[in-house]
Image (cartoon, rainbow, N blue to C red):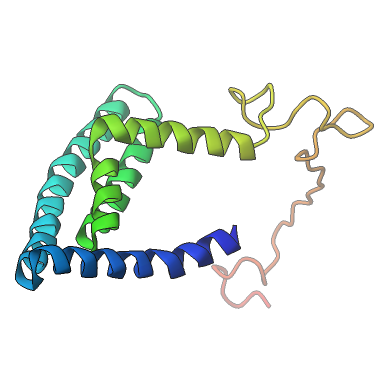
Length: 167
């Protein structure tokens, strides 16, 4: 995973610079700069609109008493897409636009959900989340069960600072 992240950090800026230079060679410097500025402005406006829609959906899910998992994931995708649109470059603009549009955002959410489920161990309790049946000790308890003892301490002047002069 670290290698993939490092490759993206190195390759994406190189590809962006290459593409900006190629587009600049085709249409000129100022039209390229204006195109990049226009895409950033359009991205900011789209981010504002889709961000509000994601927040409204989040609030609606809470009002209905549902856990807003889908809405929270959509909000994260909208924020990430907006950040990509505000970043200068044509590749990041394209990916940011795909993350902000609801139909393609559904595809990214499905991919993210599939990736998350492949990395999380699902079990029969807690609505499908938690320990599986094989995760018990020899005595039948689950590994998150904790035994402990307690002792009540009465009239200890050190632990009861409200009493003055009782040392």
